[in-house]
Length: 107
Image 1 (cartoon, one colour):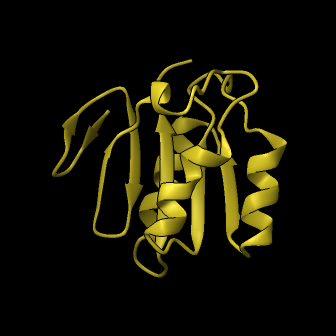
Image 2: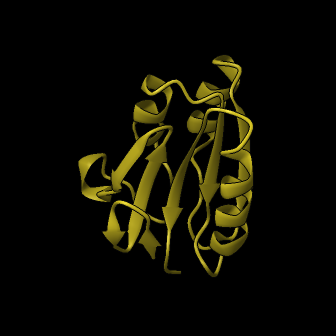
């Protein structure tokens, strides 16, 4: 994937005004059980009101139930999608709302 201002990489964490590579090793994320609450915490800290979570190109990446519970508790709207659809949705949302996203480019 290529992200404007960040360059090329495999996985990205994006939020209003910035982003960085998403290193799964920071939180111990694996395809299963999937995206951890700690993975989205940085997006919450950046003020995201909506979060887009990509599931990978083949929909292999899961999201932990605890992650979805945390986002619901915080009143954050969540969108789960295949990576290409997630990117398209994220880009559309950036025009109207404080959106963050986690993007997995493989599997």
